[in-house]
Image 1: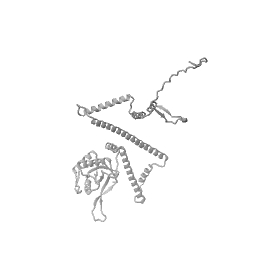
Image 2: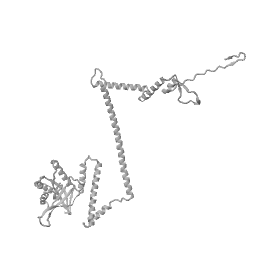
Image 3: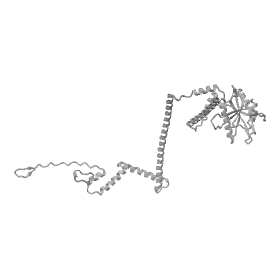
Image 4: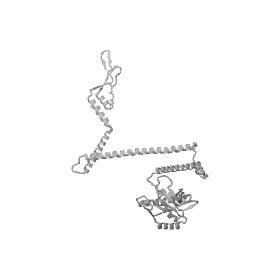
Amino acid sequence: MEEVVVHPLVLLSIVDHFRRVEEDDSENKRVLGVLLGEFRKGRLDVTSSFAVPFEEDENDSSIWFLDHSYLEKMCGMFRRINAKEKIVGWYSTGPKIRTADLDIHSLFTDYHPNPVFVIVDVRPENVGIPTLAYLAENEIRDDGTQKEEKTFVHVPSSIEAFEAEEIGVEHLLRDVKDNTVSTLATQVSEKIHSLQGLEKRLKEIKKYMDHVVAGTLPVNHEILGHLQDAFNLLPNLNMEDYVKAFAVKTNDMMLVVYLSSLIRSVVALHNLISNKAVNKGKERELDAATLAAALPKKEGKEGPESGKEEVEAKDEGDKKKQTRLARAGWCPRNQSLLLSFCRRIFIIAKLPECIPYEARPTPHGQAPLSLPRSLALRCLTGQRPQAQRPKARRPKAAVLLTASQGTPAS
């Protein structure tokens, strides 16, 4: 046997078996089952499996129980369904080989001359293939001090699937997808696992090439041909078109990141303003409630109704007052102007009858002008002086001097 190929449906059934047993039992214990498959061109394809009731003592692993009657019934049923699939071995969730595994393995020799033992790690900590395959072989020491005994020998294992299985597994993974995890986090984790798997494969290739160069392993032209095909698929990073396309792609991605950050900032600012407006409204309501509680209640009414009526009456009075002030040209912004006006009136009350206008120096050394008090009042209050109508001038009487009398005549 060159290789053991485990199909995805087998892994899913083993994990389901382990989860069901783990829910029923609080302690973490391993589960056992039977593997079904067939040999194809020197390799073993494990295409199906079923669980078998199994119990073992935690303190003494040599004490165990396997339900043989259940095993015989299930074998007969699977022969009727698919005669091509035969018992080829058994599986365990390990995660390591235990003392009783050789005894259990000898039990399955009644169904197959050389059964395979597969350990499936249902909770892998490291990224990689979660299966380990073993075969039992006889081991004899060279010194002959010990009799012949069986031991497990490791066999290469892999995971492959038929085309129909790939489609079914993809649909199943879509259904069991965790919706609590974001798509971005899932994509990042998948990229990380892919890069880790690539690193592992590259290390294996390097190790193989080192052994070939050292002469430990013979040269295999088929493997070298596959490696050459893989290297030929690598892009040429020195091409100008590739560098330009890579730069454009990177800029497009960075533009999306920049726009998303900008939109996030705008949304956060909008939420901050909305929260501030809501808090301000709550503060106003709280101040109104405090004022209503502090106001004296009306006679003849008790309870919260009287205070509510007082608040409503006060609000209505304030609205009427504001309406009257608005009609009279009053605005809250004119408060500063009113105070300035009153200040000017207070200053004018102390002014003399005539105020010397000394704001500017008079040209040519003339004497400063004097302003009447009324005009100063208008200047300080900002009122324009009313235009006075010009008085009609009376025509001057013509003075005629008579030569005889010498007296003026009009």
